[in-house]
Image (cartoon, rainbow over all chains, first blue to last red; front, side):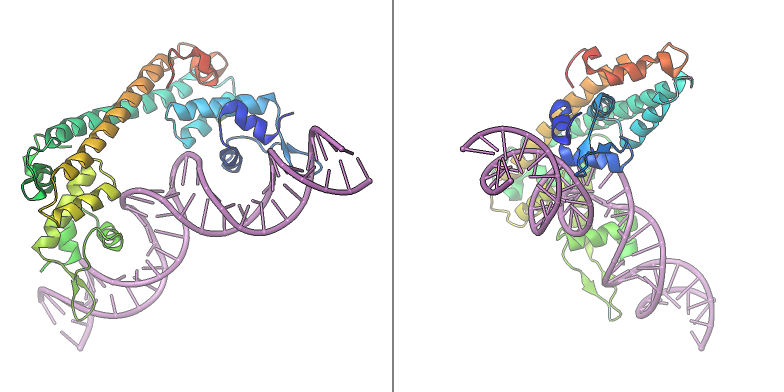
Length: 136
Length: 136
DNA sequence: CGTAGTTGCTCTAGCGACTAGAGCTTCAAG
DNA sequence: CTTGAAGCTCTAGTCGCTAGAGCAACTACG
């Protein structure tokens, strides 16, 4: 039996966040002591580690909820879980592509050789989208 | 003299967002008609285009506020504006690096060859961080 | 058994950067 | 003068937590 503090220490998830996950329905409501304190078991620990890992990989709460639901039904097709991961992967790739465009543009903008704001081309470039090499 | 709707159309910034920028102090409170409606001029248009462009490049509101302040003082050193852009660029590069690590890990995880959830390695990999090739 | 100190509880509010809606007023065209 | 579009303010909601107030319970020591 783990207190919420121990669970937090073992998973690296902060205490208020654990309670928030409970509230959001990602983890089951745990048992309570006579004095109303939460007590967790190893299943809760695993569940929370799963959530933590998925969050670290950037999955959203809704996607995690779906994955947990799937995990409850071992007979459902694996393709469902795969689709969630693949969708998320595509999202990440899109974000990388966009950030790379921004990086290019900003790298071009930064590094002003003027002295004062009046002749600063950082501000000029930000004022005028037409100075950009590409869309972003 | 532009209405808020025209300003919105010309800059691509939605009407509530323009009002929000005003509230946030990024644009000056414009003049009003006798009937209390906002009327903008070309300076407001430029300011908003600047904000829009900086936002598109991913700068935060606080950074934009600083840049606007700098723009009001043409005698200040250009290095200040440059520092903001460079800081932001570094942030973007860090985000790209992190997303690339996630991409690698997810690409490895996705593409399950099992049939049912019970034998799905997507869920297994998410449950167990030790299966990951690297930290993320 | 008493007490002190740590940990837990609930509830509320705040973050960034908007977005959406209700319910009302004003403007511009015919 | 009427109609319909566009404007106004104010409030609340988004996502994924995080922080704080004010209290209750658990644990270790004497």
